[in-house]
Image (cartoon, rainbow, N blue to C red; front, side):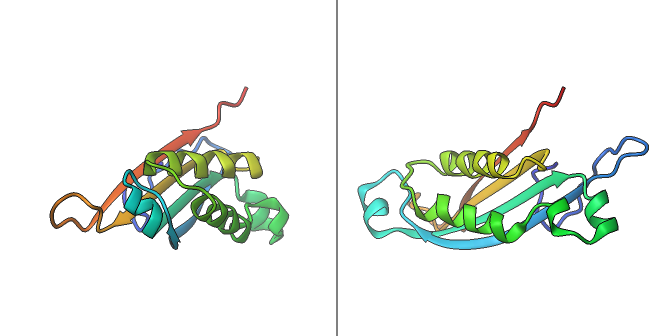
Length: 141
């Protein structure tokens, strides 16, 4: 997966006879209390999250069966729980925790990319957002 915009089409190399798909949640928005300062932890702010999950969607596409793919409603609930149920200093930690919680909950996901955005970060000047993208691919024997 590429750390490009969620709207951009990813160029994925697929071996002959194999299929891949990317299931995405784009711009899930939450109010949470992350950041380096006490004020950020006390007041909170807006956080935006994108999750891209790579998996084999062949069986789901053929059978039209939810149990053959990743349930993105379940992924959303998990992301909401991680974002709103914790207070981290770094958005890097938040992205990492989201990714590994999704991988633990959904073994069908082979690779994941999580982007966390913090609009209007406290950087001492004008800045649209701070963001981090974390990617991880399972090692399969």
